[in-house]
Image 1 (tube, protein in one colour):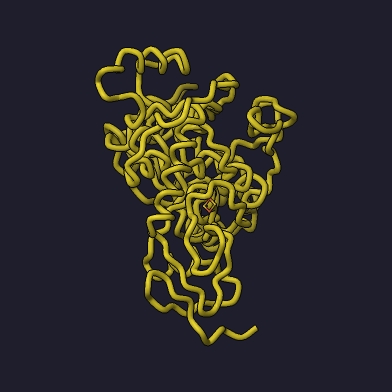
Image 2 (cartoon, rainbow, N blue to C red; image 1 turned 45 degrees about the vertical axis):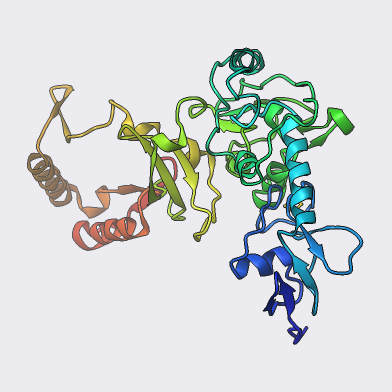
Length: 378
Ligand code: FES
């Protein structure tokens, strides 16, 4: 296929595009912000939420820019009065479709007690939504200046699922955008969650509507990372960490040699949450269960801070110099007495490639043994 010579015109500006690019992709590539909720980069577009609609000259209805391919001479408006009115309506409907108790709903002071009581009834907490300040629906409600009071709220049909080890599923906050389903099926290819039921009873289900822990879910947490609202939240983070209380530190996962990039979220000098770095290779936001949830050891009081030497059947703390001298002397004695092949070296898959390289150099060149391996479980 050849690149079209005629450009697309978005908000009066002419842009070239590649065949197959959507209006959304061309717009974002050129710094034009079209809001989205259901769109998940890298997954097939579903057009489920209709927040990304744009006006195309000559078209009978608004089009979902995440699914509509760009075309030569197409004239597009991304924030026309018609577009803004449609987006406001979509956001109002979503805010009314469950328990979106952010400050945009019923928080004008007069109803504060009712509001708190309703929140407490819904999820046993007197606090605002657990992702208040970190919610894309709330962002859009502020951006388009709408609240959830235009339409009667729909009743909460399904209880919160808190039995899982790492993830709380709050169906009252789910907007059925389907990002979690796509993340599970198209990104991680675990195929653990799907759409279930129909119409007003529709719900995202796992294994015939069972809890995550009783399904094929491997708790990679991809669904949590892509959830744009508070429907899927890490259990240890829910109501304990607010976005303004934490700072983020980019680092490399230490669990294996893949080198996944992650952001450690730190509160009071403790790691409290981990998310995948979405814009960076090799993982582009994805993590495994260990990388995303296995960070307790970082702040564990049981971590060794000094070398331990076993003496008379018990461990005692030692300095690094003393420990290294002891290891060097004993390895030398064993090598001299029994030969280098009586020594084996076991490293770890949690070490970097460079560390493992140095370890095999040490084994082969210094100890003069080829008995070196690594254990994936260390
Ligand atoms: Fe395009 Fe949801 S982002 S329809």
